[in-house]
Structures are given as structure tokens and as C-alpha cells.
Amino acid sequence: MSALARELGLEEGIKLDALCTSWDDLFGQPLSIHIRPHQIRESVLHMVADSPLWIEHIDFYRTEILKKLAPFGIRDFKLRAGLPSGASKKARPVRVKAPLKPVSANDLTLIEGALSGTEDEMLREHLRKLALKAFGAGR
Picture 1 (tube, rainbow, N blue to C red):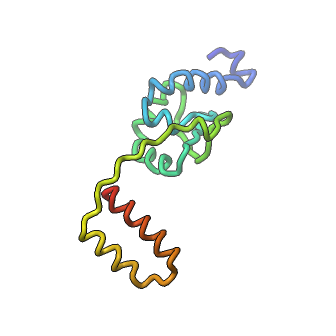
Picture 2: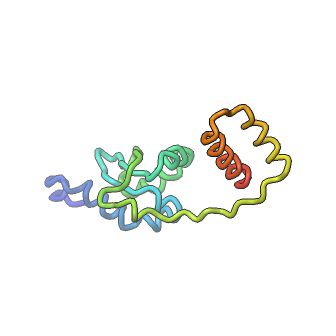
Picture 3: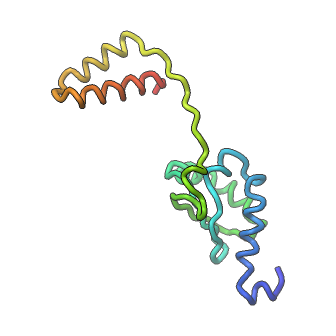
């Protein structure tokens, strides 16, 4: 990095630009879709994740990620949930729903038994739909 870039305070911006250009190749999918670099401050990369679940997930791979970021002068990173600047919710990837499997007779009996004490008809129906979806998804 040139002394002029450092003197003008452009060094971190230049590093961020290089990192953004290489991001997809460095991390691939799905990580590169859900987490984007946002800013570098004092050798700490600040990233934006489109879901709090991704923030949790990334902590398991902290060491490997830092190794990939080291050539860019990154010594640590921080994550926050949100959309990267300039992104819109329409730009988010579309999730493909897995087909639901049929719910067994035993599962139906279990669901109906659990809901039998629910007096509110609307609540009972919503809970029934939720349970059928959960059992059908194999959860």
C-alpha cells in the first residue's frame, strides 16, 4: 500500500474494495450470499449478515475465515444483522421450500391430543396448521 494512500486515509477503503471484489471467490455460496463485507476499521472487518442465524453459524468458522482474510490485513471481524447498504429485501435470495411429507396417523393423534385443551377455536386451528407443517417437514 502506498504511503500516499495511508496518508490520505484511503488504505482501508482500498483493502475493502479488493476484498469485496474477491468475496465470492474467497467464500463461495451460501456464505457469500448471506454475509457481505461492510467496512474495515483498524484492521477489523465489519460485516453484515442477512439473518442472526448466520451470525451464530459463522462463529464456528472464525479461525478459517480469519486465515482467508489475513492477506487483506484483517486481524478480526465483527458481524451485525441487517441488509448491506444499497441492498433491498427484493435482492435477497429466494428460498426453495422442501415438499412436506405426509403426516402419520400417530402424529395426527398426538397433535389432536395436544390441542384438545385449547378452547379458542381460531388459536386451535392456527396451532393445528403449525403442527401439521412441522410434522410434515420432518422436524
